[in-house]
Length: 170
Length: 181
Image 1 (cartoon, rainbow over the protein chains, first blue to last red):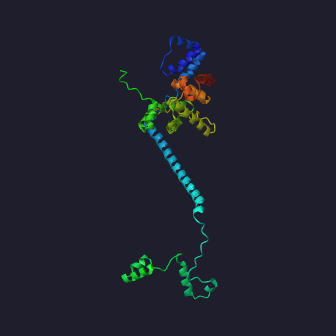
Image 2 (image 1 turned 60 degrees about the vertical axis):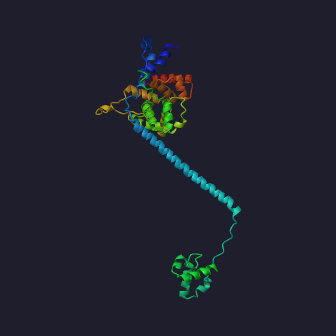
């Protein structure tokens, strides 16, 4: 190793104040242009940015950890959304695959015919009152029956209620 | 007397403590390394006014990836590598425009004694020169000059050999001598 290489290896330690030049090293430095130019670079770089204002470590840590926590929470939310979408897709596949084997394919539903149904041409001949009555019955929800509902039962006395129950039980 | 002086907790122990939920360990790590990261970024060409944000982003990337730090290289040189990647990303985002410019430079505020920071002309030339070096040359040079890191440790940090790190250093010095006249 040449004297220049030895000096080069020692430069950072001296520049950072962890060591000092020996007298022989200093003499070489004074005489060698190459080493002097390198020393100027190393010494300059060692102290670059030293005057930057120091930050507050606690505030900086809080900001950094807050950002990390925020990103992790967002990642968890994304993961859950993907899992939910995956489960929904899997469930859809299972339903599509299994239903034809286990559940008979329903035939076309029978068309519910209202008891008061009348062929269309005949409607023209009906009086207004009868026509309104038919229209009213069509407005009822499908399957609605004229049977008593719970609120009607409340209005009955005991005898009427027993008769209704006998009727239902046959 | 030395028996009374508490030994500083090693970085890897602080990292382990943080992984176990101790946020004070994170504060200690930030306190130890934030300023050095800032100087590294500034020396690599970051504008003084952007250093704080870049330090925060560097530390964010580091803590986010802390599980991946295996402790083979020093924590600080790992942070420097992250900083360097960040600078490269920023450089690409700006489509190759240099971050460092005379306009970006913090000029001294004569009314603010605390803001006496003013890069001398020589420092600016050095920063300009450093920002023009290839990434590995710049990292090796700064790890040597600002941290006094040995070639073995640099090689572990940068995934190269000590001999190659030495070559990068000498190329950096040669190029800087041309750039900084």
